[in-house]
Length: 117
Length: 113
Image 1 (cartoon, each protein chain N blue to C red):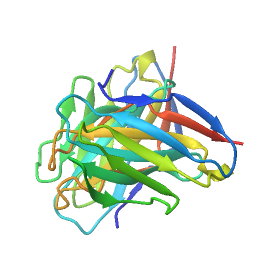
Image 2 (spheres, rainbow over the protein chains, first blue to last red):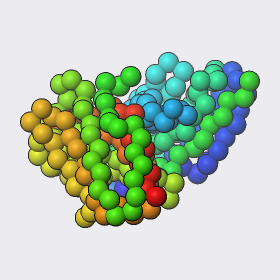
Image 3 (cartoon, one colour):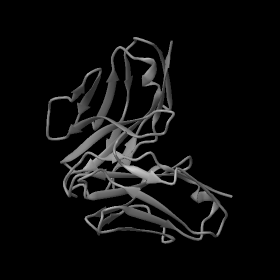
């Protein structure tokens, strides 16, 4: 079984600052996917970024980027030039590739990110 | 808007009752996943259906069941409800058997009193 750990229950930064959210995971799988999902106050789950474990290059989506360290089983999310709309719960999630996507996502407990004006 | 729809948005019911939650996946998506989000357990995978067939079970209670119909919509049935079943229930859809991006619906908020 896989576990995902987010050690920061809450973080607060000023608008326009850069913030990094931490995530570690434990698995015996070699091929898998990692995700960051955002859940704003509306409760909608929104996919922010995805990383394939077999790719060494870190994924980037506009202001969002990840630092994927496979040996350390670490997958952090960096948000640059943070905006008020980034205020949300952020969930790190894992899915093993060998199951063909059957097993669903394993989520961490989440980090509540607050962007202060 | 993810394109995934869920009804109803809110549901309030009493202990011991049975409810049905409905999910319509994005157009063209064959896979539907169900998740439960509660304060105690966080976000948990419950069950996955692909093109009408059950593919995987997660932490789904025996009191809960699901199915996916020929038009690909899915229903999650919760019976003998307990206070602890109060939660936000999400469905998510993806294109196929080996698609790794899931798109979530807005969720159904279930309150058991």
